[in-house]
Length: 114
Image (tube, rainbow, N blue to C red):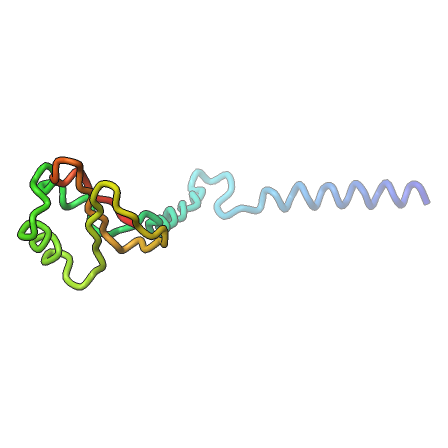
């Protein structure tokens, strides 16, 4: 019984060793190289996109009705709000909404999305 078990173990080990050598073109110098899969596409951006990064030319300009109207015209029907010092604002999250930040001096200080 022990001899039969040893023989089966040796046969199994031999088959496993041979199966490892059965690759295409093994030993011929013409081995196929596995082609690397293309990297996965990056996930969609989770950053809000309200266009704030495209409005830098307005920073430092007075937050006049004309300037605010020009900014609104570039946005179409997307939501926008002008936030002046001391003004209360809701904390709801709307990533497509543009916030126009106005400083104490009445000039546009910056833009952000929320």
